[in-house]
Image (cartoon, rainbow, N blue to C red; front, side, top):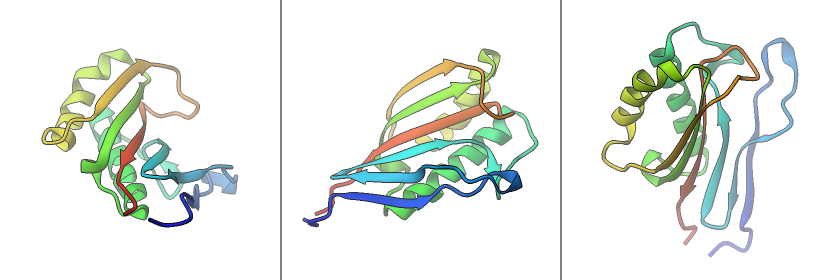
Amino acid sequence: MSTKTLIRYEAAENQAGGQRRPFAKAVRAGDYVYVSGQVPTVDGEVIVGNIVAQTEQVVANIKAVLALADCTLEDVVKVNVWLDDARDFSSFNAVFQKHFIDHPPARSAVQSPMMVDVKVEMDVIAYKPLS
């Protein structure tokens, strides 16, 4: 087992306009990897699209961050979801199911106003032993 059990994976990219975001993309604490909330952005810009397109981008962003810690969606044990509009729940669920059907994690989902103009945000916890 590694002697260093707390690893921070890359600072989050700057937002549009160059504003720095003061958090890591993910942090490994022992055998768990905590991925910061992901929104549907590419190069700091929110993608244009409906809940389906935005959820697909969020999942793509999560996959990229998990890869930094040598994890995949199969390692995800818990997902937290924030939806801007509860009416998007069914469409969101269809995309979520597509990516997690064979290895469903525990999940919470709530409706909440967003900090940026997006329809969805997700964070995940993955479990992947270091040894």
